Length: 130
Image (tube, rainbow, N blue to C red):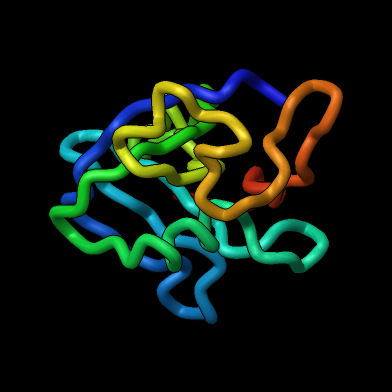
């Protein structure tokens, strides 16, 4: 698993996806940045991000610490041009004062912290169009 990035964000918008089926995740906006949070892992278990979201009762205007992975993605727009963007997937939430020392004690959901020796299975997001 890639190294997790950490930062404090203020939620400015949120939208469950997909719109035409039961939701599998949520797009979380923080100013000009867009993050993705999935509700379940491949095995059907609730993700640590979803548990943390529920536990902290977050809404628009909430400030929260996020630990996320960032991957470069590319798609073709309607003109056939390649558009590259950073896809940010939230793995965990923490309180803003705990994000810099994010460790077992900082994980809101209490799930295992993913490390190279202790990977956490993730939802395959490659087939989800954004």
